[in-house]
Amino acid sequence: MAIQSLRQQVVGRAKLVVIKIGSDVLAGSGKGAGLYDRRVVQQLAESIAKLHSKQVKVVLVSSGAIGSGLAELGRSTRPKTMEQLQAAAAIGQPHLMRLYETALAKHGLKVGQILLTRSDFEDRVRYLNIQRTIEALHKMKAVPVINENDTVAVDEIRFGENDILAGLVVHLLRADLLIFLSSVDGLIKNGSVVDVVEEIDQSIYSLDHGRQSRGGAGGMSSKLQTVEMVSRAGEAAIIANGKADHVIDRLLAGEELGTLFLPAKKKMDARKRWIGSAAKTSGRLSVDAGAAQAIQKSRKSLLAIGVTAVEGNFQAGEVVEILGPDGKRIARGRVNHSSSRIKQIKGLKSIQIKKILGKSGREEVIHADDLAL
Figure: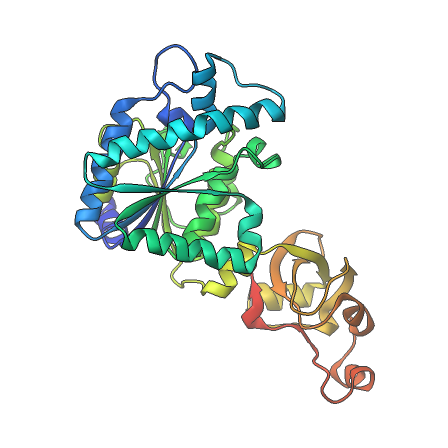
């Protein structure tokens, strides 16, 4: 199948699109950090309006609050202390929202601001509340504009959390497509842009040269991590140059622009998405080679006999990480037993477990339905 035909097939059916726009894409070429590129913003608003007219819902995940704040302060360099970064974000966020509000108002669209941190996704109740708020905004014909809450976040500012945040929003809404508008043309191999990636493996990460955006905290590494998370769950993703003329229109028309990452054939269900990517973990379970293979290859439940070690103090129903025999993370899962109970039954067979726990004792430490790779 021709690349353009493949692109049209993958992106043409999208009914819910998450667009993540980076700080460097928003920044203009004038003096001072954070000065906006009005052409980029106007074209973005035009594209969003066109999608709305076609009944395609859009969520915008936007960086740029810190850059905007620095511009208002007349500073040309990014501060090094966390307090100054948070203060700059507090000053810049209202200006960033006003920019989108003005641009989208020309097309009869409203905007709704949502400021989030990673912890908002870790709590199941708050996670579902975010979903309901976004759905309500769409019903009101408003565009949700999401940003990392830089005024209270700490590590997130340093590690490009808006990239991961965009992936979590895709998971939350089960969006059809994630578009990264970046300062690079896509994934580069041997000096050329890779058109299509069918499946992400470690060789893809070797193409990452660690380039970080000039005005933000993200880089190709965080984008690839996010794209892998999204594509494995069954959604497509694109990394493209946000400065390209009418980039959104061209991408959704199937033009060979940027790098398209194809989705896995089978979509992950909503509960596994939360367990695998958003839920806060309370401990770790190490497993032997047989259990690791059963989880990864056969998608089977984790039985007590395959558990070799337990770390942390957790209760039944909490989410833990699962480590293979080499110590690498292979999955996450929601446990049926507390940490103290798993320590009692780890490495034991079913008949031995029943002697300890009684006839109703479950040898399944984590059921297959509660496991996410």
